[in-house]
Length: 275
Image 1 (tube, rainbow, N blue to C red):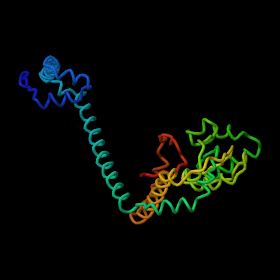
Image 2: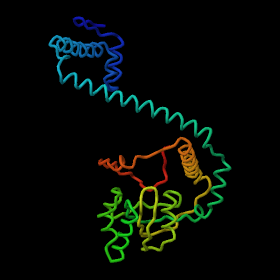
Image 3: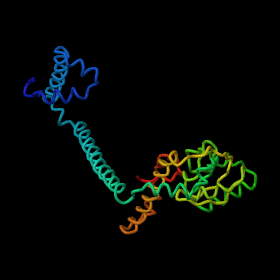
Image 4: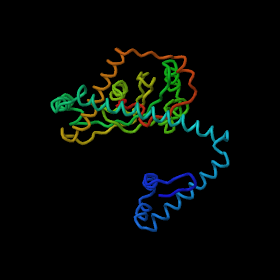
């Protein structure tokens, strides 16, 4: 389409660059004036490129360093993309073959847990999450000595998504959080504090702050939620089985040496998994 010194602008160059512009500009480029204006922009870029090479900027240390950094990032991004694509493809295969559900599976779960759907209970609770059972026992002792649950949550809980609100969790119904957590909080009376509760996330002290009865849910209304719940359970079982056969070892010293805290999870107690 154009030649700028020894550099050329091909039809493919033109179409590719135009495709990356906003839709309104692409519409403008359907006119002769729009196409010429866009080509003129590409010509100006080529002029700058030709002159930069004449000036030898491609040999500049800062240029080479920036290109090397970009290459490394591109290689990481490509690796991440390849791995993510393989994971998604294998998850699709798992859902279709190994963690499939039938209508009968879903109906059986609904019937076996009828009380949770016919008379669903929504719980309000707060928690304090710490790393060790010793820390949890110290928290319990401080609570028994009269310290405020909310103040302690703000001071010592390692769950930053709830600590700032005094440990307050979003309201939940049975089946939405970790079983160990739910089994501890549901029997509590309003205002009562649990003992030490262990989950995969750490050690919790839980305070039940309220509960209410929700409207009954029909099978059709609960079906999608049950399907997701059962698929998570099947996937978790598959992970545990496969992990055992593959073999997984953790370098605890290396893990403990990591000083950068990960982003806070939005629902640290939910039963979600890698799927």
